[in-house]
Length: 323
Image (cartoon, rainbow, N blue to C red; front, side, top):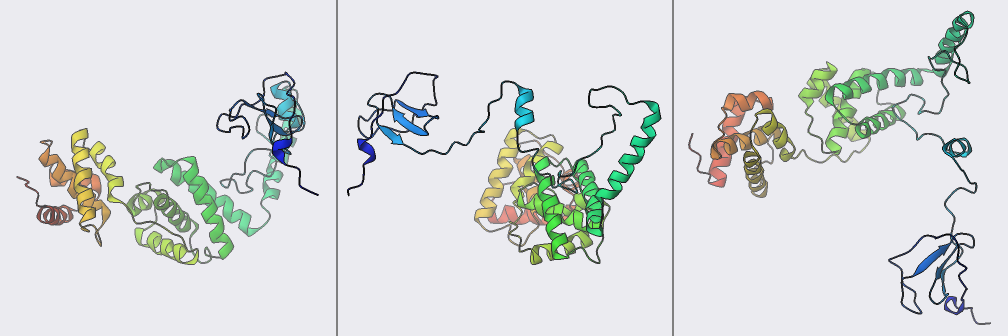
């Protein structure tokens, strides 16, 4: 028996509420784009000729109706998204600190002591083993360091998820919690292309730079992280802003770095030193001169490093810089 062709099926469109319009699709029979979605029957229909373009569509919306915000909130089946920054990922209920009942009235003073004990034991019961206790301490420290460094919510969530993976792999045994936290923050900043150095993270976390670097390499090796190389261009805007230089200087510094990257001059050299040297050269070329000491203080490198990178860039790129 021959298959029934879709193109042979037609339907009369009954006027009603204005449904969804599809501008990119065209009717294969009449070639027009006047299509409508019939949610009641799960079909996309051409209004002009009545051809059914698609049928048996999946209804992705809820199967209930809500006429106000309160009904929508009460009938929804999903709660807030999972938060890796919470030790329990937001899946455990909490007793708030407002001392009010469901109607908004204040709880009697005679019952407040009872509520205080309930909160205390609820918090203790939510941390039932050493892993949850470790997460509670680590995520608090992670939030503190990220706040001091001005990192956004996405970096915090990614760092918290990476720390949980370290816990699952047993990489935190024998190591300080603060060291692992600093290492995962550094790893996620590099993966997201955010210019944060080991020195900055070591300063905020109060952990030696060498310890953070060692732990970071261990995590990257065991979890097989694909961390891109640090691009020196990420630091140009920071240095230019700190030195109060103009847009022309920033543009010139980026041009110098692009030429240096094309020539392969940044391979094996610290990105901070190369970026600082490019800003220094650009400031001289544009007339907004800054001394090597000023640039070195902003970049966190030595004047010797800037001088060495400056000579390499000047010679390789044939720059005419008059100092």
